[in-house]
Image (tube, rainbow, N blue to C red; front, top):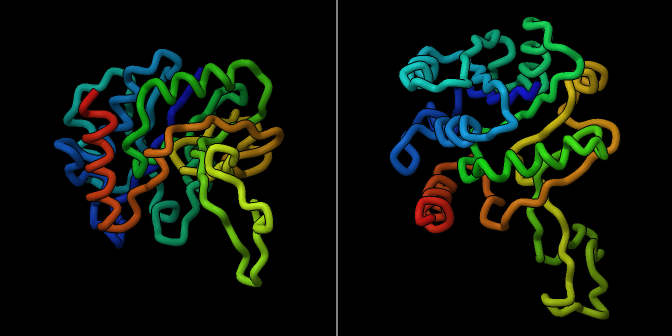
Length: 224
């Protein structure tokens, strides 16, 4: 069984109720829900929230795989980790250890059905214990004490000869319930990477991210 888990709380400080704010014509959280609804490998989608407003918006849509879960207030505060609500849900619903648990971030609305499906197919090959999504970054990085971190500045590579580095984009994470219980973390064991397109690098954290991602959504997803 594959469970896609979307934690969304009502207490966002930078963008109030951002998870249901209209993004390219529909509530932000609905983009991931609808992409997951179309994903053949996903059996169940769980939206975990503490907000009545978010609850009402999601429940107003007639989704076939999606259900709502009322998360505990202590796991919806500013200091609570995402792992805390993951573990809360796993324990309170007594999920089987063999369940594939996919943590999905609503702040990455450009994630498409094909991305979820391809990553789950890769995970089903049983090569990795857990997986995360990344994008390839072709910037050169330095430490604050003036050391180059990912290239030799004496032999600066041309872009076409540079493999770049993989940067976590926060779109989604895949693991099994047994591993999450044991390690209390979304990632564990042998970790695999599902590489996503460069335009999915940005997450919505600040108001200025909203305009950027709406533009990217129109260019890369809606136009198609």
